[in-house]
Image 1 (cartoon, helix red, strand yellow):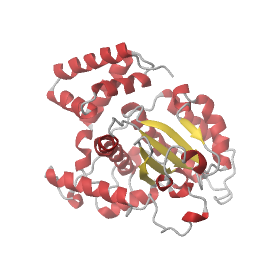
Image 2 (tube, one colour):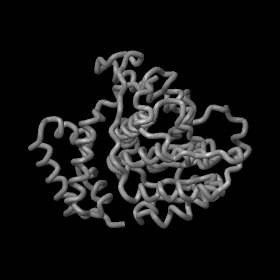
Image 3 (tube, helix red, strand yellow):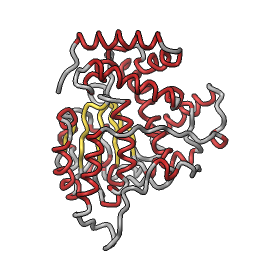
Length: 344
């Protein structure tokens, strides 16, 4: 990986400050909200994403700031997704949760890739929820953790559960591509490591195709662990922080059925309460009366597009034990345009 040099960080930070102050007030305000008192950290992240090229990193950050302004990202945590029932439906079909913190203070997120549905609500609501979790992480979780551990914490860890991964899951890769593109262009270098666990054959087959296409910087962040990954994960976090799908011993078999994916889990209850509180403070309309909120998703960079195409091509050759024989798959059926007028 090409590291960001001190000289490049200083040069980029100065260029950003000049661009922000010379522009309108919205650009300066969005930049301030982005760096939250640590402009050098933002510069370092974007420089790493652009191989320490100051000009490319500057363009990337400015593009991201304009995206934030155009989509009102800085106020997204004061915009409820809708009713609590809609929020719960999103979580039930897009399993994600936070289980705690690793020993270095980084938030640990768990994602149920194998059981993603993306069918309960319009696509743009999944996108909005993903961005809200990103912003809650950056505005609330990371600052709180930094204060608690006594040093700056700016990144997180993610554990991806591939249990029950099937062709029907991969058929929804369009939504996953949108989410990956948003993170790639606007939240670079916010995840230190992606731990992949409980991998079935179909993942292993796809991984052989995808891995050679990944940038070296990306490959270094991904660790495919054997089985549930429990043994390796316990080296960096306490057992209570492990997601339920990583706990394979009898000690946890009698635990309540509620998991970190459950809408009633403390993380999701706190996030929902925070959004409602911010909504009231900003005098937003009640969730039931709120207008539809759509996010503009940029075109993915070539690497992501190539990976999507290769997965689409490869899965056609694999059998899916969970699908009925002869079932057809449409990889293009889920797009932002498909559901943009279908508001719940």
